[in-house]
Length: 249
Ligand code: SF4
Image (cartoon, rainbow, N blue to C red):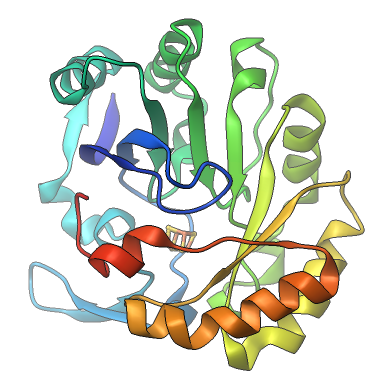
């Protein structure tokens, strides 16, 4: 069984290579990191104040009572209820989806969607060890949001060169994306080069840090400049521009 935080859509993919594409999102619960450096303050259901990323409700098991334990069939059924009369993309996000990679229900879900001609994206921090042995696994698009030191997670935990290499070698369009803010630009550049020199050639997308349209605006020009200076790609975060950090859209 899988811990599912929420299933929502149809909406558009708000960031990354497939930005603007109609999609349904399946958000798993649990993450192997906390990323307190992203500085989003929240309160747990029992009233404890903490700090993490903007997906804290899918990261922190303190919110487990709001998650649903579902089989792959339950998820497929729920997606069918939401789906319009065309096959839109399936985005599996989190939390950290690769925590479930060894889970048969998770693999059944991936296999079902790939074999039924859906484009499947897994949004991942790409820090966990996985193997890609099956053909359907090689058709998945991995959107790898590798964490830099501003997450305040240790290097050994956040950068897994073997997994990045394995994914880039076995899949077609998978890419790296990094969230950057003005103050972190120089250090980020250094850290990104330290990662990409160790892995096969990969497309790199840079996105502006921010939890609101205002913060995105404040960072976007710096991030665009950085993309142009380095031959990386800029990617906006449409969902935040339009809806700030509202859930379920
Ligand atoms: S890895 Fe991603 S989901 Fe997990 S805590 Fe960090 S930013 Fe949040």
